[in-house]
Image 1 (tube, one colour):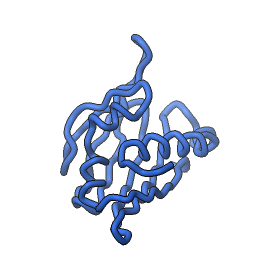
Image 2: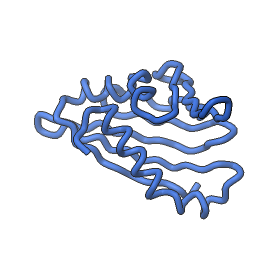
Image 3: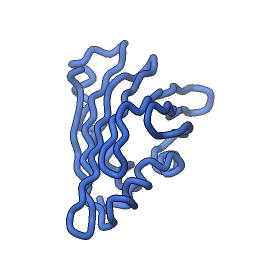
Image 4: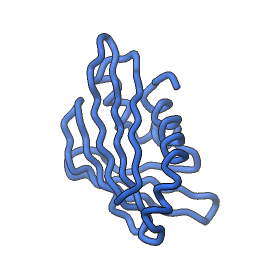
Length: 138
């Protein structure tokens, strides 16, 4: 998988607070346009982000592969439409926290070179949504 991006967010709150916000699926639903997220997060758990407009949409199915609260998680995208991996580190930074988000992504019907062209746009969208989810300044 060649498409991917990294981003870093600085949050004024402590890691345990940021971790709780980051994995609150209701916060994802409230922050990611046109998307509802359901399921559970934790070791081996599966959750789904359903993105849709009316009857048209797709499921982004994810499985938690590594879970080390409140420091690190690895999530694999295992659906038919989207594939990839998300690695998140939540790092203390003085009284606040740094969230480091690394993501590889792809789609079976889209060549990796084409998917990589969208990385700046995908990164920008994730940055805005994650900033709302964790309470970071953008």
